[in-house]
Structures are given as structure tokens and as C-alpha cells.
Image (tube, rainbow, N blue to C red):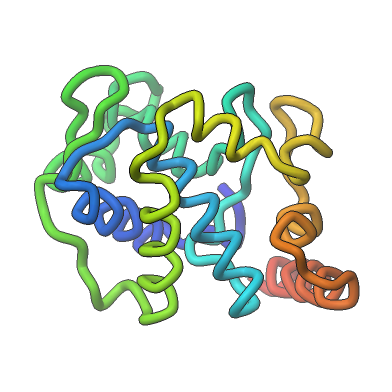
Length: 182
């Protein structure tokens, strides 16, 4: 897992997003919500919410650690029977291979005001989009500049958000420094 990944924030970001969407939605939509929320938070506040690494997959950016966790929760991983996943099953459940439903409310103490602001923004821009629309919407500069199944650079995520190059370099350098000290 990424050194910067924040498990509790990521899980509560999923739970918050699900709560805003009426308690359930598909995995694809959740991944896009996290991408746009992390992008906005990184651009506006200098850090991502989840700390996850995004991978340029066929249908758009996918948060690597969250994807691994959800696959384990669904039963598609060697780690599906781990204690952490068994505990997570009390919070989230798959209705089928793709639809995720929340069983509990998010722990709002895990999310800052700016986390909630950016998650709400992302939910609002994604909630009414179909699978195809979300796929196309997430195929921006960052996804386009990355080979499939490879890590999307933080620099391209920020460039896609419209940030100036000096800020892009500053945030990328800061993240490298943070990762080095973890």
C-alpha cells in the first residue's frame, strides 16, 4: 500500500459518499467520486483526502488501495478472510459484484470540513452520470497522459485541475518528502 494512504479516511469517504447517494451505488461511481474529491482537495488544500495512488485503468482512474480493499471485501482476494476485512463487513456489503451498500453511517470525526466539502463536490458532479458518462468524464489529461494500468502522476492530476506549474512541482515535491519520512 502507498505510504501516504489513510485507511480510516478512505473507508469513511466511501461511507460518506454512499450516504449522500442514498446508501448504495456501484464501485465505478465510488472510484470516480474519490478521484475527483482527492483531486480537488489536493488542488485547493495541498493534500489528498485518502492518500491513495490512482491507476489509469480502462474505465478511468482507480484508487489502488481502495480497489484492493473492495476486491477483498467482495471475496476476490487472498486477503478476503483477514480480520480487517471481516471487521469491514460490518460497515459495507456488496449486493452483487458491483453494487456496494453501506451498513453504517460514516464516522464524521475521521473527515475534516474540507474533506466533506470536496467529497460533496465530487458526489454532486458524479451522482447523475451513467457508467459511460463517468468513464468519459474521467478520461482527462491525467488519465490520457498515463499508460493503461500504470500510476497516474500527482503532477498530471494537478495539471488536469488547472493548477500552475510552480504549485504542481511544490505539491509533488512535498508528497515525495512526506513519503520519505513515513
